[in-house]
Amino acid sequence: REEKIWLTLSFGMIMIFMLITGYQGFALGMAPPSHKETIDPQKVDETAPFNEPGIKQISENEYEVVMTLQLFSFTPSNIEIPAGSTVHFTLTSKDVVHGFEVAGTNINAMVMPGYVQKITQKFDKPGSYLVLCNEYCGAGHQLMSTTITVK
Ligand code: CUA
View 1: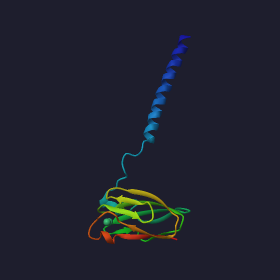
View 2: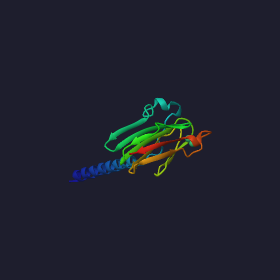
View 3: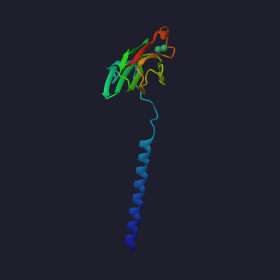
View 4: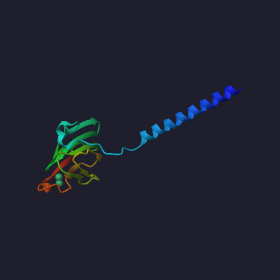
């Protein structure tokens, strides 16, 4: 019957619309983030997770390090982790642009005020890794260093 044909056609149209809408939603969901996570550089001390900088074990062999960089230090400093650990760093600067370079690894990042920098690194080899600021940040720049001890 004619009615049946119309019913089938309109049902088909609805399905097509749903597919298009669904696909758009999916495509949007899959889109890479268009900007970095931001933070008010004046309120770092009051903004999670930077209100509690430090090292935290999140699972076996996995650690989270929340760190602030400021003239001319890293907080926390002198981190210690067991060999074989994967470390998720969450970093921000409280004043000017600093660098976060870990000698003996591929870590070499800029840490800017107003932005949150995230880096994940696995530390297999025991040793003392020198952490340096590699962006000129003022008179104390060359003193700005710490260590990550892997044992
Ligand atoms: Cu901080 Cu150079």
